[in-house]
Image (cartoon, rainbow, N blue to C red; front, side):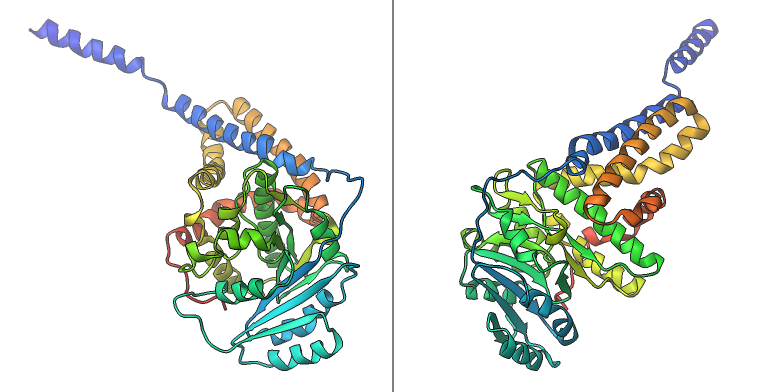
Amino acid sequence: MRHKALYRIFAAMHWIELLPDWRLILLIVFCSIAFIQICYYLFFFLRLALHRPSRRDSSQTHAVSVVVCARDEAANLAVNLPGILVQDYPSTHEVIVVNDNSYDESKYILEELHRAYRQLHIVELRQEAKMIPGKKFPLSVGVKTAKYEILLLTDADCVPASEHWIRSMQDAYGDQTEIVLGYGAFHKTAGFLNKLIRWETFHTALQYLSYALAKVPYMGVGRNLSYKKSVFFRHKGFSSHNHIPGGDDDLFINMAANKKNAAINIAPESFTLSKPAGSWKQWMSQKRRHYSTGKYYKPLHKFLLGLYAASHFLLYPLLIAALIYTDWRIVLSFFGFRFLLQAFVFWKTMRKLNEKDLFPLFPVFDIWMFLYYLIFAPALVRKPRATWK
């Protein structure tokens, strides 16, 4: 009996020796995570880095309706709206400002601007929409008021980066195009917070613009977005997500865009510029409000975005552990290839989006994304606020 017991013990020990070493498992896991990141850069992000707008033999100017929603935005309207009203656009266009129950001086500023610019049309809302929180009701009113098929949307705190903004955005429409995704940048100011805000904006744009080029469009930003009026009515506006305060831009695009009807525009004259948040608290509140809509995206988009975020989140903790406990040469080979590929993509894309001053800091910001995911992940499950201002 004793011999049989010893035999079973030795057999069990031999079986344990056949198990993979935990350090090998760690190395495999790290390499897998790094490989996932490399795949995203090669398949998605490299498209934007190498993107060149297709040349056209001729261009057409469409009639355009610019729609801006404002609530207690008197100061922003006074500063930014003239930049929209003085656009150099040879074709018919109008600028519609929906003044949503403002209590400040917005009404009087708009009336004064209307005297100088006849293309400005003002819609005054004096009653709150019941059961439709956020910006969707005033934006729907603006769309319904618009005379023309091409809609160009921006916010009251945004100003076009050039006097050719309307011309550039509408010029991106092709035969099958119904949606044009633009880049909404932020003004460059002193301070680390400004760079961090612009980095996050760049990183988000890198994703939604690259995905659109890969025929998987999933969102746009209301600071610089264009679509056809017929698309809005074909999808019954925001009716499928009217109960959600946010999502007038990203959720609508997530629903309406497909591999054939969405285009991007990253020409510098097509950009808009916004004033960034002035404090960490304000910025974090804005980002939490934005991420609260992500859980309503289509399953494919949630999977792709979730896999990228999870692999990005795990990369640096696994890198440290793998460097300590495994073969550092293999670890640095995978990480080094990812780093060089990332540097190439960022340099090329930052130049296109006029954010190249961020490039020297990209390793710092890339590590910061670990904390970023920790901070904002709860917003994906938290109930969003019921107001848009």
